[in-house]
Image 1: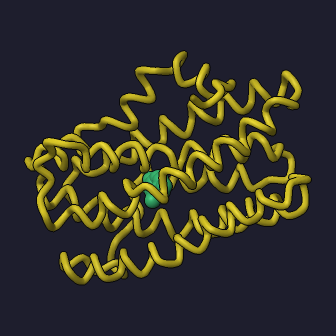
Image 2 (image 1 turned 45 degrees about the vertical axis):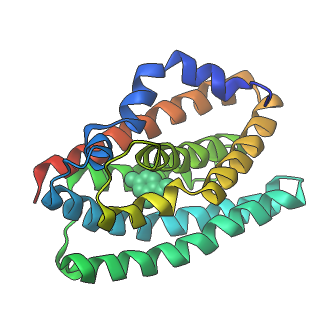
Length: 221
Ligand code: HMH
């Protein structure tokens, strides 16, 4: 069994928020097949815009992994994530045409803008590497947990949505998230008390942003 670190302690402490982020009604509706396709299209358009902002954030993490980590493998893990974002953007484009969502007309909603502003704040050099890594892990892990759940036994996920679930729910993505978590845990083992407070706060805020992000799908815009 994996060693329990400080992140697991925080996840226990903020268990209900973590569950809200990883078992949102929208995700459950994909799992049980009751998903409203206009909600899916809203999520698709908003997430496409999000990923376009997330890529520069990951690039910033990559630069920091190269300069600040002291472990050569950190950079390779993050580079793998950046490479999969390249595929992801292509995937979004093909899903957009499949569902008739024209991304050029999609406008970022409030929750999306707020999440993107939060990412910008994390790109400041004043935020410690371990804090950034904690946020990065949480962002990826929420999608991994959520979509892996949709692939579990007994799911009624509509066939045309399994592509989305596989994208984040696959085993490779799970292992990648686990590597990012190990990096964050390693950094936090040596972090100051102040950095630990900040990392926990950042984790909570990611979870809150993720819940608000899923909530946008209700609008069915
Ligand atoms: C809102 N969170 C959101 N979108 C994504 N594509 C990811 C996380 C990726 O993990």
